[in-house]
Length: 335
Image (cartoon, rainbow, N blue to C red; front, side, top):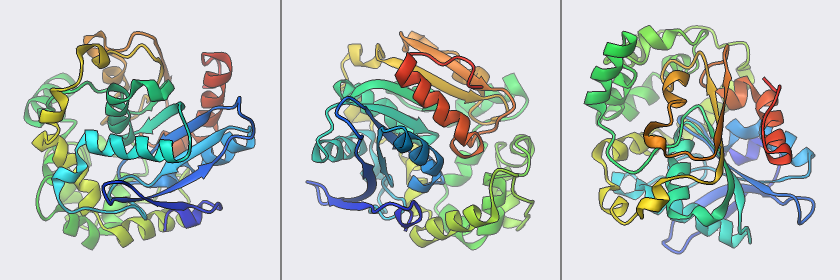
């Protein structure tokens, strides 16, 4: 479903463990041109990369853009265990191997960044460079939502991850599906500041969605694109997408992460962090901190007036940034 809207024929591949992935692969025009692996976030699909797909391929670069597990035309397991980081990372590496891609530029947005991180610490040899959009690199280990909500409320005046508590409820998928217009409205609000009051705090997102409150979409999201987004997400449902949150909160990857060598928890690969000054969940001031010094070769760029949805909201600028990053080794005045 998502791939049919991209204007290029997609592929379906059954992997060794029986999981089927849908993805778009457009080869680079020459052997010297690299390929970008584009990993979407929540609640999204390969369609969120439509601007970058066009611009990168127009410049001769290759793109591999999967519907990630639980999304689009890819399989949607209902069990949380299926969404372990090592398992999903293995899926992506298998797809790369099937297409004969030895090394790629890894680009993630939102949860796609959370997958790009374990992709790198399990398979660092697969990446010539990394780009984290909105969400920074995350090292192996538990993600303590309750502690983080307390800490962020003390620091910023509101809890950044309160909505995760709702997403972890057994009824969350059915609630979002039954009130999808309201859910989409708060996921993509008219102004990003609404996340401070009506999305991030504990209980706020659920209250908004159940109230069926709807506000206009921001100017960068057309009614047509919003309709396509809803069509894709409602066809597949939200059980799979929400399982990404649940597996993090349940730390289903704990046993796998014990096998990660200490050296792999550091990133020597050239890395670009692209953040947004008006992202009030994945805050730029937090994302730029490089906690524990894990990133050793990186630069940070911030869209000061931008919100969370950089691939769409700042689509042309992000494309130029990606091109400059691979062509020149750094990013100058794209912002």
